[in-house]
Length: 115
Ligand SMILES: [Zn+2]
Image (cartoon, rainbow, N blue to C red; front, side):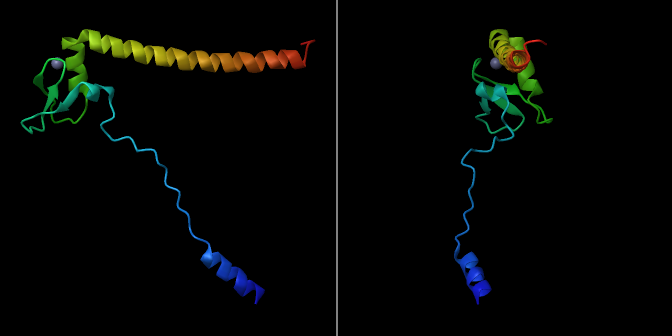
């Protein structure tokens, strides 16, 4: 009977499905989308460039390459700002990695002063 009770308990336990509240990043997660929105005409091959207030050919490739190219050629400042940001993020990440390595190394030296 004990086993039966245990089974019952199992059944009564509410199954909690904890869904992550974080929104999944959509496919269109590229940074270029901060400067573009879908064309007002509803043309799927064009996107509206906010900095120059006109439609930009997006192409059929469904890649953000065209838009990135547009930003690079027409809005170099925006583009380079963003690139600088990316570079800084990268440097920041790398320096953090370096710091953590140095920290673990110095603690190793402290643990073995004769090293
Ligand atoms: Zn533009």
